[in-house]
Length: 437
Ligand code: ATP
Image 1 (tube, helix red, strand yellow):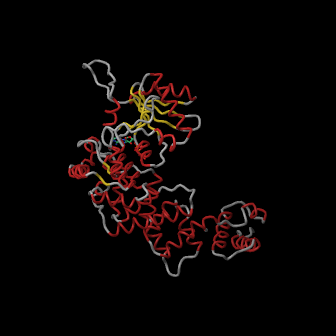
Image 2 (image 1 turned 90 degrees about the horizontal axis):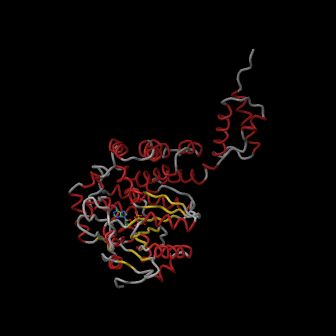
Image 3 (image 1 turned 135 degrees about the horizontal axis):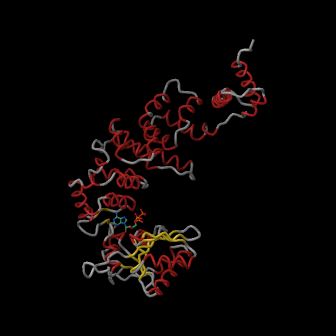
């Protein structure tokens, strides 16, 4: 594969038809506007790796926003432009999104001059990117459609399975790239280049990560923990001494490894069971990470990183209240289904998986999976309306009786509707207010 390899065939065979047509149309528009147009970044990388990726990032050598507006006009699409950055998002009527950027390499001929766009600007635009494998572009203009621009050896590194930065100051410019490097290496099963590894070690020594806001660090951590092999990602972070940037007390241990493995198993089980349900897997791993920290440290982490309220609630429920729940669930004799239900209802699925991962005891696994698969869907046959028809007067008794009916059903103490009516009648009599004199 030489520098001018053409991947037109790959583009046409791997991308959906609609998309190919869109790219060709965009290329012809670029020709009319007399600008060069490229697709860049992750989409190109994944195209060459044979992995589906429909996140199209376009770069225009010229006015990216003008190009985006013209493209939108032709496609009855909407545009969201960020003038300051020369970028725009094109929203097609079918919901498909395209990112359009202006190749950013304006230089100034003299201090107050307007910036001039250079001919070779795509080359410099690519030079600002994180890794060689992410710094590839494919030309979209009609002349040369499908031509790969590879200035930094990205194709070679894809072939050799290496994540490599483009220059020695890369991590100083943006320390989040350290986490990105690990993320791509783990995702694709790549190595880190030797220089890149040394640069990461340098970045750790220089404590570059303290400069990162909690927000940026959390964003990167989420993405890392959302990888399929999150445990491997955490291991790589640990190898580089990066875990202490989450918390100084956090380090690799067999206990942490066991917790992460349990989180992985719980998530695997859940995803098989509920193919269609979304779950914030990363959060279950966060719970596993924090599990090995003392409570004070967990509080620090909750302070340092801007978790949403819902996320913090998951962490608190699994980490801070988890102990009590786990203790109750592992009592002898084992709690009845209704007690399990009362302990677990109202907890998010992430919290439940976090609890599963933290305890690993057979009894707990069984209780939580019974709750998820069965108990949480159980309802009494009678409704409030039935109770009303039985003569119950409005008041707090409705909820109490319905709760008792649910418990009885969960514990298998009632089966038929008649059983429930009997029980309801008994409860109504027991709790009936004393007859007024
Ligand atoms: P993913 O499949 O995880 O989305 P991606 O490569 O598409 O991977 P994005 O975060 O969407 O990742 O970034 C798109 C492109 O922008 C990258 O391929 C890279 O060229 C560039 N990029 C993103 N983040 C950085 C960064 N921190 N520093 C330099 N370049 C970056």
